[in-house]
Length: 105
Image 1: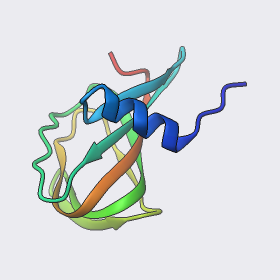
Image 2 (image 1 turned 180 degrees about the horizontal axis):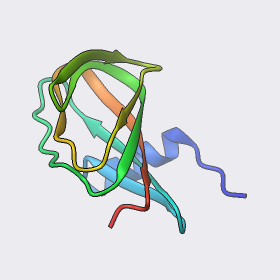
Image 3 (image 1 turned 135 degrees about the vertical axis):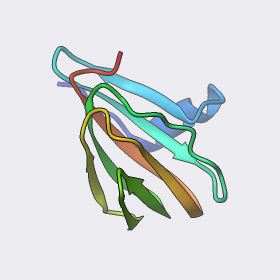
Image 4 (image 1 turned 60 degrees about the vertical axis):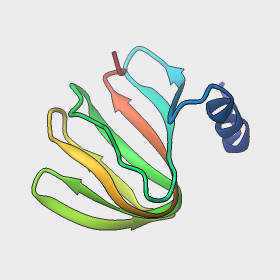
């Protein structure tokens, strides 16, 4: 069993001066914590893996392909591999748990 505390992961991510911290990597999946401050631009490019976002805190819009929706704490978004996507109009610091399958390269 592996257990993680969100506050510890967020502190580790911040200490490494990064927006993203991968905290789990297994044979069929990986997981990380992604954070963007209010007003930030999301520099993501399409990934080769399917991914799921779980919004832990914050408020923003996300565009996946041609569709845009508002997300906040508790929102879950599925992004198919290869589809352009990005968070925008971030009005409150955004913290998102990300799960990739297969694992992120």
